[in-house]
Length: 259
Image 1 (cartoon, rainbow, N blue to C red):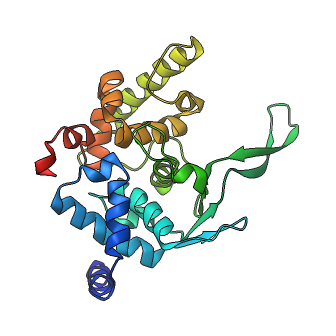
Image 2 (cartoon, helix red, strand yellow):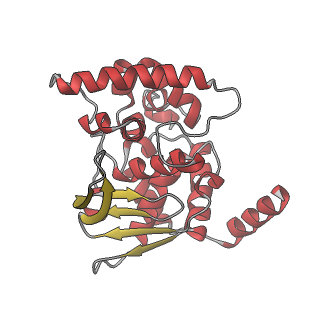
Image 3 (cartoon, rainbow, N blue to C red):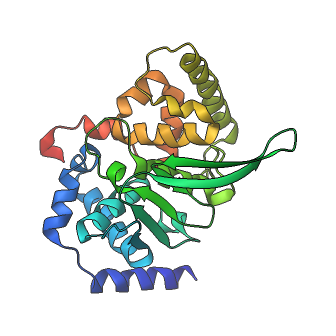
């Protein structure tokens, strides 16, 4: 049925337009979108149109969602799949946006069988086969800081294509599972040690929480501050370039006239 998907997408693209002023403003808001050459901007535009057609972006906690907010979230989410496919986000339909941090309540059982109830403030959350939940106060942050809650949560969604997030998303044909495991495993253990020793790093220490968070945080940095990932964990950078089929460091190094 791939032919039907292609036909349907082409039909949507022909019948749907974007607000040019909002589109340009959003692209100018991030270094990783400003650096896109024309052909990649056109591809991103198509993914954004299709994403906004398939996904519902709704406000919660009294937040009214404006068109530019929808565009902002869609552009960042679609950067991850720029050279992949929208099917990477299949199986769920909703993005829920709160004005600021929201409280996630959940239960877990410890090794002694005791059930604990936790209420934790969060800036983002992704549910397996469920929505992406975002804090707009965090989602609208600009600049190449390495922190990007939208990329973080949508990286979790890519990780969840084959089950619970564990830092091992389904790899493309030609990628080696052993090489991925070695690169990410060694980098994660090294990073945990550095965080425990309170060593300086350009990568968010939250990456030391788990392999799933390591993948999501490194994905943030891959797009926001790719040079930091390449210099600190070159093998991980190579794996991410193969997985996302992008090389942000090379793209950002291009002269402005080529973008």
